[in-house]
Image 1 (cartoon, rainbow, N blue to C red):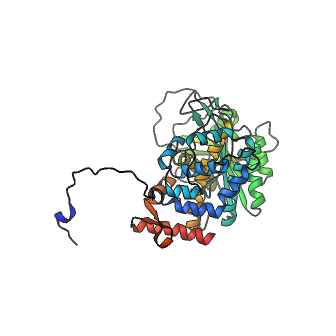
Image 2: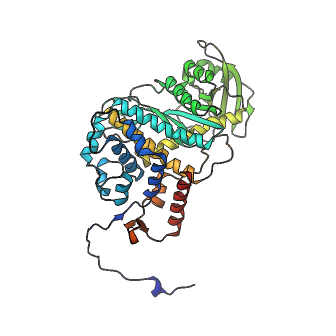
Image 3: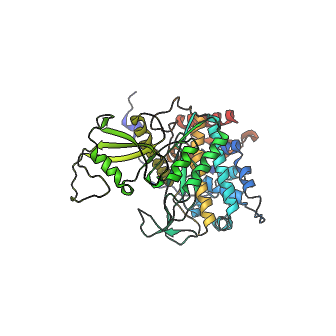
Length: 458
């Protein structure tokens, strides 16, 4: 139906006056679905048990501070001071089970009072919730990716050090090692380290602990992993092989001049497609005990090389191809292995989303334990956003060569704009607590779908 111009356009000039009063209005109506998720997981009670050993019992318990930080990050805030902007929100207060939220100074003191035992228990709880989701989904195959990510600070937080920092050179930082699950896009666990350590520092023991924890809960699952050249060592590869973990690992050219000779002497390359070719051979460094399957891969370069000409002693230089070497204990075809190993780039997407959406790169405290708790809260906020979407949509039927996530996940930022950040009013018509929102068919469909799924899952 065609409308007239007068029915469409209107003139508004006057700026209305502003009045602030308590109207029981909320800006985060969509938090209702996370309240249902927290109740289903028993999150608050389980966090309470993580701090039962602490003798100090403040009005705002340490578990409440952790829950508040998780909610704070889910809503999209990064700095502690921003709690003041939703201090009186009735839905946040109901989710927390409080009549008032703690002051920023109270939260800062609670972070400073955190200690190693509490951090370890929260870390175990974070992993346990991921394991529960994996058991529920009963996936045949799980792919664990391992990589470090820099957390920079302008101050002198406890435990930080000056080390590798690509974006903020010379800044003090942490360099935690993360384990992520490719099929669900969640953080499984992390190893906290100062910023001046090598990427493989403590990696072997951490990897074995992750696989042991997962295998105890999922004994019939096939485990695999893909790692970069920083983890290329006989200790790590041997431990993965003995644990029956199928792996691929990048091989560093600069450490083995023999690899360059093998590539230069090779005349026949087997074609994978128009872009990729390969050859393979059993090989081992001289100091290793047993050989592994090594794949030598080249990729046709489409761009012209414009850099200065110089001799490269350890790295093959070719204007037509880029080369890389990969070691594996898998028995699949070269094409499947190349796709599988290249799929590890999805972990960088997880890091990027977590730093942007849940402040994984923020260090709010000067104390080591406080910063570790905040990192765990960021990991749990990210994991919970994935958990609620896994419950609300079906899993893909099969695994693809690159091992992408089995669900089509929305970024948490998109979930905020679509569902969480919706205005509403809490009222009690006829004594029945009711959340009234503006009529919107899309919001109504998504919100009711999430609530229906969570109530059925409970």
